[in-house]
Structures are given as C-alpha cells and as structure tokens.
Image (cartoon, rainbow, N blue to C red; front, side):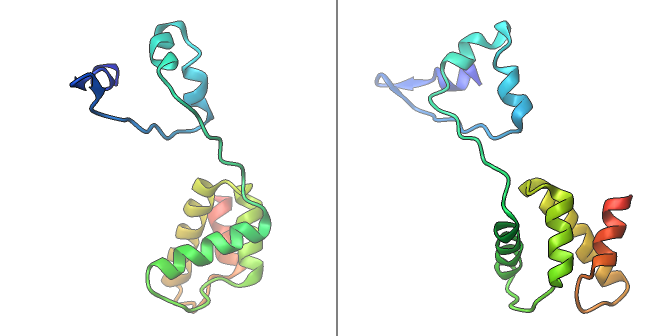
Length: 122
C-alpha cells in the first residue's frame, strides 16, 4: 500500500487508496510497524449499526436491486434478522442470504421466521 500511495506524477499523487474493514483494521494501525501508513490516512468513517427500520429498508433495497418488487420476507422474519444481526450490514447480508436459500429449498414463497431461526442456530 505504501508503495502505491507514494507513486507520483508531476508531484501529484497518482493514486488514492480506499480501505474498508472492520474495527480490527483500525486497531492494527495503532501498531508501531504501521505508523507511517497510519500517518498517511486522511480520514476515517465509522458506520453505525442500523436501527430496526433501517435494517428493514436495507433488506428491501437489496431485494429491489435484483429486480423484484415481491415481498420476500415476512415482518417477523425481518425483525429476527435485525435482532440476530445487531444491525451490522455484513451480518444482515449473511443471515438474509442464507434465509433466502432455506426458503427456496423448501419452496416457500416468503422467508419466514423459521428460516431465519434455522440460519442463526447453525
């Protein structure tokens, strides 16, 4: 990363690097071996966990992005997905995707609470 960020053309930085990661990545930059890299970070943004309604909207938006307007999750399944994920988008994605597969395998037209429950119990 350091090699890439030091690449200049006519005294201008030729490359900007965007790092995305979990909280552990931020803590790694506190290590003395990464001090020079940490000093070159311009800014950081911490995404907060989603509230319940935001989680619902997030899942619905993801479903709409694949081109369907069908209601694929029951309200109770959405609520359990939010609760189990803690509002963390990565966890929401993992749980929702696995629950969709479970529902598909049993030919259910919607993701029900039992599909989400079976995912979070494994």
